[in-house]
Length: 116
Image 1 (cartoon, one colour):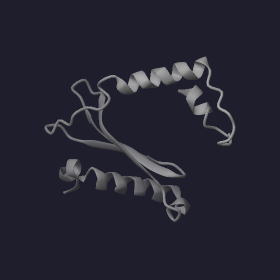
Image 2 (image 1 turned 30 degrees about the vertical axis):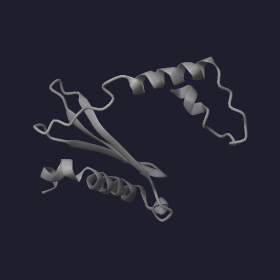
Image 3 (image 1 turned 180 degrees about the horizontal axis):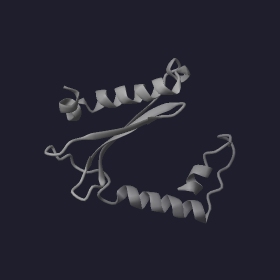
Image 4 (image 1 turned 120 degrees about the vertical axis):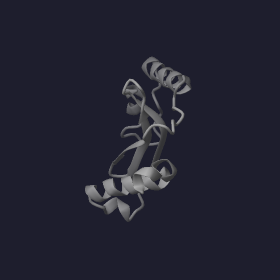
């Protein structure tokens, strides 16, 4: 993945992209992983749901998951959003709380037992 990430760093949109063998291999690997099942798990309503979230300087994101019988996280959904201009100046702890609030709003139907 690193070769693809490097393509996005510190360059003008007018600069040509040097897409070589390393980048092609990373792209093919990413394409394979995204197309291979299971990308997302189906929810099992007999098990509790969990949420993991985080905030960066510019966005919040998170994922809804459950633990399978062997204790591994099975991801059900991803979500994220860009911070507004006003939210960009929030301190870190408020951005983290904003991420939690957004996750609870998006996945409230899955989390209703936890929230009530």
